[in-house]
Image 1 (cartoon, one colour):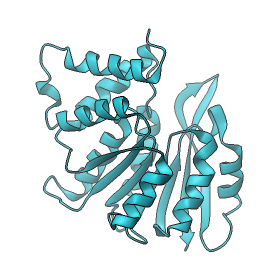
Image 2 (cartoon, rainbow, N blue to C red):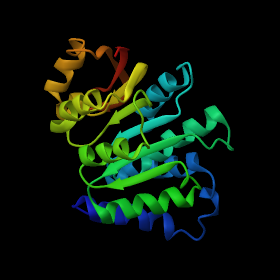
Image 3 (tube, one colour):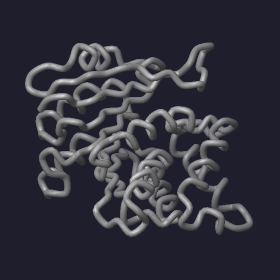
Length: 236
């Protein structure tokens, strides 16, 4: 059983690419997502489980106007980034050229696994994997104009919980949210992000204001439903 994140990523890569054929995954992101999700239940792979994804998907599908730009803090092997891109493509059609998922990963070897999965399913024009500290990557996107003020429809936090709050506040500083943007965070209950939860549940501070709720899923951890924290931006 691989122990390091890099070894686990390589094992997931081998699990997919060592199959007799990868044809079922070509241009089929949902097939790859579900294959990796199933694999994660026996391999202890870090990923955004399907029961949680269903909750997030419902919120994204309810947005008006439909989301086009997502930023993700924590790529790992790209499982959730592929799912976000698939949702955007389902909402806007296969020929949409103005949908983007910008996802941040600190490890180059892990990022390369993510890129190869993204290419396998034909989403390389939608999913952009940036390597380095997430805060630096987001600043660079804003500086380059790839992400514009008010241009982020959803931010997803699934990296190191100790950075959730500071990276959310960076989003505020860079003014990337609009009224109606969503912020979705995993692992706020287990292992926990208490300062982040306190902040968003209090409505934020300063100009950006939030309304948030905990959405239980049927995915059970330590005997209780796991939580996806969904937050709406209500003022900027």
